[in-house]
Each structure stands twice: as C-alpha cells, then as structure tokens.
Length: 370
Image (cartoon, rainbow, N blue to C red; front, side, top):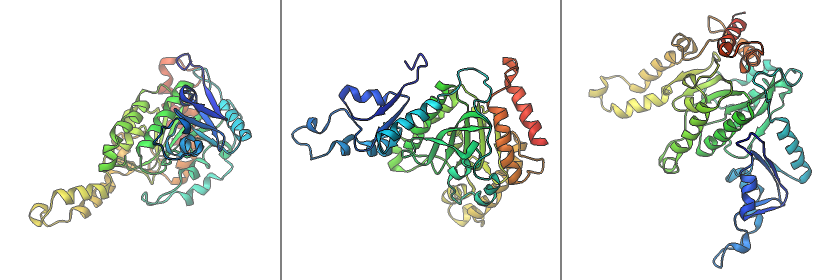
C-alpha cells in the first residue's frame, strides 16, 4: 500500500502480538494508548522458563514504544485521545497536487513574533527551546508534533504557514542516533505525502564518543543525510543559530539543494565552531616551539568568528541572503522568515515546470529587499 501512495495509520487500543506487531510498526504513523495498547513479538507468557517477571506494559507498553524504542509515534492517555490524534494525522496527510493553493485561511501566530527578540539569544551557545520559535512563526501557533517523546533533540511535526501545510524539522540540541532515525522517518513521510519541508537549523553536529561510535551514530546519521538529499519535495532552510560540521548536512545545508536558505543575523555557519577548532589546534600543536608562542585557542576563536558571520557566508554563497544589505536586524529576519516561506515552499500554479525554482528564488529575494 505504501508503494501505491496509500496512507496507513494505526491506533493501538489493545494487544498487537507476534505478526500483529508489524501492523503498527509498518504504518506511516501509529498511536498507542497508555495501559491498554501493547506491541511485542512475544508477550510475557512466551518469554521462556528463565524469564524474569515482567508485565505486558513493561515489555511493550506505550511508555516503552514512544520514549525508548520509537516503534509508536504518538502517546495517548485514553481511547478518546487516541482517536483525536488519528483525526489530526489524517488532517496532515498533505496535498495531492504539484502546486496547490493554500489549504486553509492564513492566520497570524497566537504568540506575537516580536517576542522572538527576547527569546533568541545573542550567544548561540545559550540553549533555547525551538518550540518557542515555532509557536511564533506558524499559523495560530498550532504544531502537530511527530514522536514528541522519542529523539527529543530533534523536533519534527506539521504546521501551516500562511495557510500552506509544511513539515518542520528543527534542532533542539545535538543529534543522537534516535534523533537521526526520527528525522529520517519524518522526512521520508513528508516525501511520500508531498508536503514541503522547513528546516530550522541550530546545530553543532552529531554526538561523538566511543559509546556512540560503537552504537552506530555514523550509520544512523547517514540515514538522515540520505533522506534529506533524496526527498523530492520543496525544501526551505532557516539558520536560526549555529550551523557547524556534519550537522549542516543532516539539516539541509547549501549542498543539499534547498530552494531557499535564509540566515538570521545572529547565526553562524562554519565547518567547525571556534571553540571546537581551538581545542583541536591546541591538542595538535602542543608546546611553545610548535605554537610559536601564541595561544591556539585565542587565535582560532578570534579568527573563526568573523569567517562564520552571515555577511561572510553570503559573499561566499554559503546561503542566499541576509534580510538587508547591512545584515539587517533580527526583527526584519523574523518577519521575512514567515513572509517568504509561503512564497518559496511551493511555486505559483501558473509557473512553467522548468522555471519554477528560478521564479521562486527571484520572488523571495524581491520580498527581502523591500
């Protein structure tokens, strides 16, 4: 059914055992009810003579599959909530035409976008909940989040911008294996439903270390990068903070052909952040004889920051443009983010197919220069 483009949504209201466990696992999206819904290949009676005592909820309940395994996508407290979530999933199945008009009446965000001026930190190392940004960009501040309890450092979900349905992929910390798998699943889901993607980048990279390398972080990260590079829907990228290292690849950086890449004035883009590069240089060049008497950390930090500035990356075509020739203000960037998104995620219906992308670029750039 998936190959024929038929959506599959599962609500787990009871037990799914053995072969039945694959029904929700292979669905596009699944909802599981706390206390009643269970998914496992073999229940507690089939665990064997040497099993320890476990309950069905401990083995394959809602908490396990929404927060740990990621088999189920949505957690519901009861059956009524589960059925409401099914309706929400159906609502976000996406358009079926190549260039649809807005599917809903445009709305202003419920939260004032001007509040972003006090939310977005000047220092990119200061953490900020990306949901606060999303709430001030999307229509009505409504956001249907995908797998909210799993891979929590990557926030994915559906929303509308000026009436257009979009899938949002936003960083809420460093990328782990779970986050990468969740992101790959969501990107492929948007590709199947023909829903445009909006990436909100604030990423230093993927998690590193012996434990994570042994756990296959490179393999899982590659799945996200592959999904982003292969998905055949319009992509729109906004760098709201840092964009460093391999995280730029997984979050649809310049090389992955977003229709439009927009950078807020407080954002920075580089192969490696200044502090991280300083640590590498300091480790590599130990001793006064090799460093020539200068401190590698100070020199790298002072040299790396200007090179990662939005004006520098614009000149080198790392992204399309900043809001104004003088790199603008954060306020103008915020307003341009929402205004240009609806004009870029889908081309105009009357535009000839071979000219869609160029037209979208020119329209966006005109809006930003006004």
